[in-house]
Amino acid sequence: ESGSIHKNSSTNHFAIGGYMVYGDSYEASKVMNTYKKIDKKHKKIRGMPLSEELKSRNMTVNEKIDIISQVQSIENFYGCAIVFDKSHMRKSISTSNLFFNYGVKILFQDTIFPLLPDGEHYDFILSIDNRNISVGDLDDLEKFLQTTYCYYDYTFSVTYYDSASHFGIQLADLIVNTMYMRSKDRTLVESILNILDISKFRLNLFPGFKMCGRVRKIDFKVSELTKV
Image (tube, rainbow, N blue to C red; front, side, top):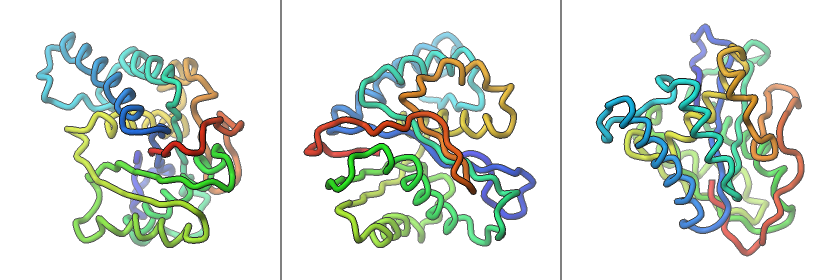
């Protein structure tokens, strides 16, 4: 996530997003290993300890371009994000964790499901940053998604990770932060947006039905697992 959900925040935008990979754990590891390799290279150039997290907000534009240009070339990688314009929402956000769950639902509904072949079974395995989740709420999202989509042949499994030790979460943070900044101050990420392969990314704006990026459904074998 990027921006602030909290109702008292002065920021008008909030974003939830990341990327999805279809296939087995090997397919997912290709994306993370690619990110890890580039991350290691830039830490060496900076003289940073390899154990220290290089956060997306501290990256240079060229470092971000290097990462995204290589990751988006992986065949079964797709970036996705939903940006909420809080200034146009009719109700204030009362509880951050509840709204986050709702936001993940909208992310699936508007940016992920439209790209998947209809009427098939999907196992969604979600890896999520644990930085803003209270211990008592760790299983809420999984239950929420299972209940919300009980009519469909979908299963959901949610695991929370510390971004400092998970390259997939760090990559997701870079993607969602880029989409968030597109709405907040596009000039700061214009050069990054210019190198995006629009067939590999989908962005939706909420409220409303505005979207940009990929529209065509992903063509893959339905027997494969879908990992998010």
